[in-house]
Amino acid sequence: MSSSLSDTTFLHPVVNMADVMNVGVNLEAFSQAINAIQALRSSVTRVFDSLKDGMKNKETLEGTEKAFITEFQDNLQSVNRDLNELERLSGLVGRPSESHPLHNSGLLSLDPVQDKTPLYSQLLQAYKWSNKLQYHAGLASNLLNQQSLKRSANQMGASAKRRPKVQPSTLVPHPQYVDDVITRIGRMFPDMSIELFRPNGTSAVLLVSLGKVLKAIVVMRSLFIDRTIVRGFNENIYSEDGKLDIWGKSQYQVFQKVTDHATTALLHYQLPQMPDVVVRSFMTWLRSYIKLFQSPCQRCGRFLQDGLPPTWRDFRTLEAFHDTCRM
Image (cartoon, rainbow, N blue to C red; front, top):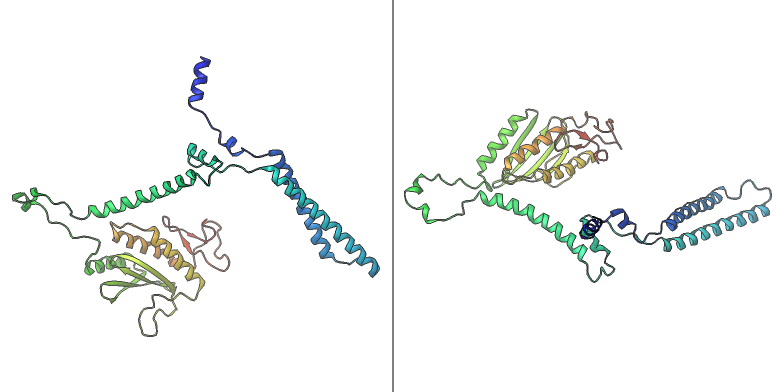
C-alpha cells in the first residue's frame, strides 16, 4: 500500500507555489533588512531635523557652530553606517523566483539560462497572440457569414427560382437607411436633439444637443461611429468658414473628460454585425449625461471632486462616478 502511494506521488508531483516563490530567499536576512530600512529612515529623519532646527537654542555663536557641526557629522555617519548595513543585507536576501500564471509551464522561468532559452517569455507571447487570433477570427467569421460566397451547380434550374434573393450587405448600408436609424433614435429620446449633416458625400455628421448641458459632434462612416467631440452648450461649434468644427477641443476640462470617456465608449460598444444597435447603445449612454451637474458620485456620494462633477458613466448601469472613484 505504501509502495503504491509512493509511486503515485512520484508520478504526480505536487508543487507548492509558496515554496517555489521562496526559493533562494534568506528569510532571516530579509527580516534584518527590514529592520535596517527602518533604522536608515530614522537616521535620515534625524539629519533633516537637525537641518530644520539649525543653530537655534544655543547660547554663544562659537559654541553654536561647533555643536551644530558635531551633531550634523554624527547624524551623517549614522546614515552612512545604516546604508552600508542595508547594502550588505540586500546581498544576503537573494532573489525570489517570478510568478507562474501558467501553472506548471511557469517552472520554465526557473531555467538559469533564460537569455539563451527564453521559453517562458515566448510561451506568454504565444498565449496572448492565440487569444487575439481567436477573437479576430470570430469577428471575421461573423462578417463572412453575411456574404453569399457559395457557388454550386445545384443552384441552377428550377430550385434556383424558389431560392430567396440574397440580401444586400450591411457593411455599407444605403444613406436612406442611415437616416431612418438616426430618426428612430431621435424619437426615442425627446430631450436629445439630433441634426444630421452630410458635408462630404455619404458620410454623416451628427450634431447632438443634450438639453442645455452639452453638444456633441459625432462623425460617422456609414453606420460606424468614427469619433466624438463633446463641448459645452454655450461653446461655438462652428469654424471660421461656417462648417462644423470636428477637431477642436472644448475649453472646459469637464467636457474634455467627457470626450475622453466617449472615445472609450466607442471602443466598448462594438458589434460589427449590428451597427444600428451600436449607435443606439452609444446614444443611450450619451443621454445619461443629461444630469451631468446634478448626479452625485455613486461611490463617494459627493458632487465635486477636484472641482469636477462625476464625468464617468458606467457602460452597463449608466451610473455616475468620478474618474478616480470608478477604479
